[in-house]
Image 1 (cartoon, rainbow, N blue to C red):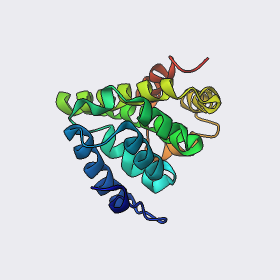
Image 2: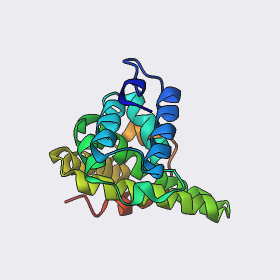
Image 3: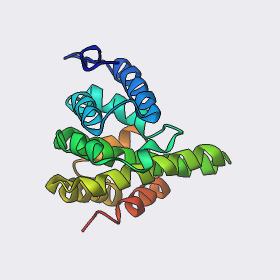
Image 4: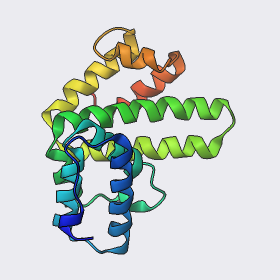
Length: 178
């Protein structure tokens, strides 16, 4: 697929972003793209919230190891939209941590391990971004998980996370909360 055929619509939908990311990951796995082409395509996807959401839901859950060893181009692309990327990665850490607890309660270890993988990939990525937003936002999320108040309270309440899940979120955030 040439650069001209990888167009990210200005008002991309979540579903379109998933499809574009699947195509991109297949090309990455086949070794058909340079790191600079990968960077350009991911940067175009993460420039909007829908694009970034679709990218992360696909990239972080992909069975291949692409997300385990992100290239410099992937990191630079993610750094191009720090507000959107940091927020979504922190929420992915929270959601995957809470879901791992829920899956284990339901004796669904394969799903729990998938959630663990998303959490560790999200944490690995966020630690490589070196954005000044990370510590501040992670602290806010941690405070909301701890106290049930603050800027992330509505997010945590919307998903109905209980005490054990909120503790798992705090534990997952520990490496990045100063």
